[in-house]
Length: 183
Image (cartoon, rainbow, N blue to C red):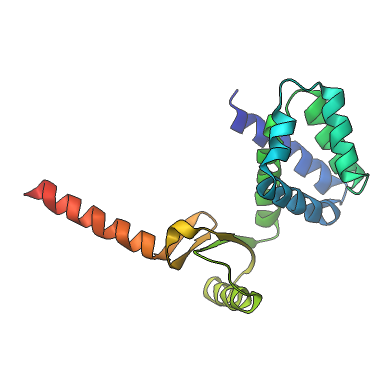
């Protein structure tokens, strides 16, 4: 079984458990924060993936990091993955859990990629525009990607809307290559 299929299986099982126990609202903010932790600290993921560390060491490091601040069901889920040598799928399982939650709540998953940092007022304006255009609530993650050069890219539930200089340059490049092939 592929790692992605395994991550999906674990995420779905945990999601269904949380749903049946009415814990989704309690667990989701912590899942969201753990995803941010993984994104901001790739070393955390590397430690959990380290084959040189035993499961007890990984569990100990994890418990020291969170210091019992997680809901017990989420903490047990993570310890389960570590104990079953499945820590490599933890991050993907959390992402899938997040997608399942947003889908259940009919909330759009939005990634707003910008070339440089932007203020909260701009983020709020983008959020309001997306809510108006799609007639749905949304959750925005902002990613700074200097390679965009200028402009932005908005990804709504996987669909890309590219208004970046990088995207425009790629479109011109593609057009020129197609014309060259036609000649």
